[in-house]
Each structure stands twice: as structure tokens, then as C-alpha cells.
Amino acid sequence: MSDLNETKVQCPYCGEVIDILIDGSEPHQNYIEDCQVCCRPITFDVTVELQGEVTVLVFNENE
Image (cartoon, rainbow, N blue to C red; front, side, top):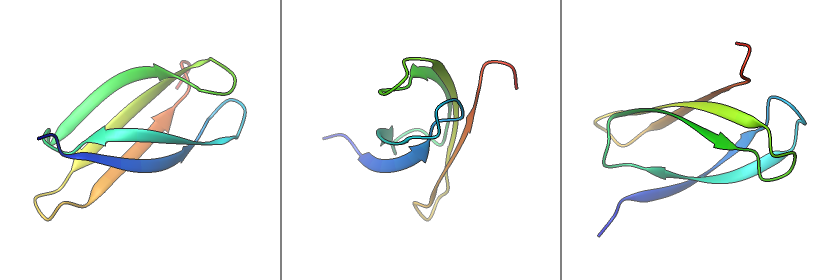
């Protein structure tokens, strides 16, 4: 069974709020996923604390 958490983030390009799924089984993740609205590549930096708190930072390709 996977530990997926739904989280809302704001696209750094178009400003739309989008829903993403975070895999809570990994303590740190860094990956690229296209925005569901404008299709531009968003870099995600995800940290899951031991207490289960999830921190998601998003960046555009030039940051």
C-alpha cells in the first residue's frame, strides 16, 4: 500500500493552483513534473518529516 498525499501547489509560471500527489514513503524527493494547466516544467523539492509533515517547494526552470 502506498503512502500518497494530495497537496495543492501554485504553478510558478501561470499561477494556477494544481493538485499533486506526494509519495510520503520517501523522506526527500526532487523531480520535474509538467503543470497540468500550462504544461511548463515545474521542479519539485519535497521533504517529508518523521512526524509526517510534508513540505513542497516549487521552482521554474530558471530558478
